[in-house]
Length: 413
Image (tube, rainbow, N blue to C red; front, side):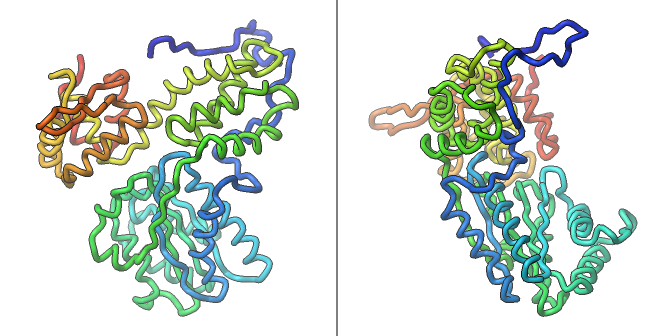
């Protein structure tokens, strides 16, 4: 990316970890995604929605299943973790037997591995055979443990669209009805995804069994991002090291693009790191601008990795067509996309859904797709690429679910 510069420390070998003359950071972890703040900003409604899902468990009722959608950085995971942490404290105070399990489906996406992950969380003392058993035997072991412990469990599937087999959602949601569990025990399922079309990929019988409530988390606006950053800086930075305009500028950059709190925090951390490297007295707006340049390159790759599968296929299609034809139209993308889906066995979306995904790729800056009016012929988008197509393609081909696409495209030499 033009103008990109990596900022690094430049010390002699004997001074590798020498501190700057000015201390910028205090507890830097407060700017990371692993940090769970005491209070969540601008998510009261979403917190209440998740609370209402699990509240029945406090009166020995069945929790409600849910699918929570939203772009990266809109607070899906942090809200669910926040509510379940509060639930855990409540259950300890009142002796309820309730546990929660977080499954990252990007890393753990097969049925047996998911069951083992659940068992490792709820029964770490059990010595479980890791292989050689049938899937039904692992299920039976899970039912046995839950019944023996008299335990109810909330299972959170983060990036649920990465699941290999959706049948596990059916089997877990039907456990009580199928009399696998005692009456007082229950299983609740919460799925998190940035793919608004994920439910279209699930069989109707599974949708019916889940009977889930669907929520969409909106992006943060600039004022909300300012509040989030201000809540973290007292922990993350030394007092007085941030110039007045730093936080508003970080919030403005992030709000204009995606309303992504994660990106706002990363931008603020980058700005602080650059100030340290320059041995500056304060973090200034100029450091934010340099950090933004650095972040855009890093975030581009991360953004491509986290795209839903259909968005990745659309992006593949655009890369292939732009290489051959230059700027292209929505109709050309649709025609070539359908050919690719049929060849590799993916479900084909309708034109409206394809257009929406192109709009999203345009919004996040991966493609440039302005609407062109063509008089009596209506309107279309004239689509081109915004970034290095080779770099994007290499990241896309890292997704194991897309390995069958590789032979279809002409890879750059």
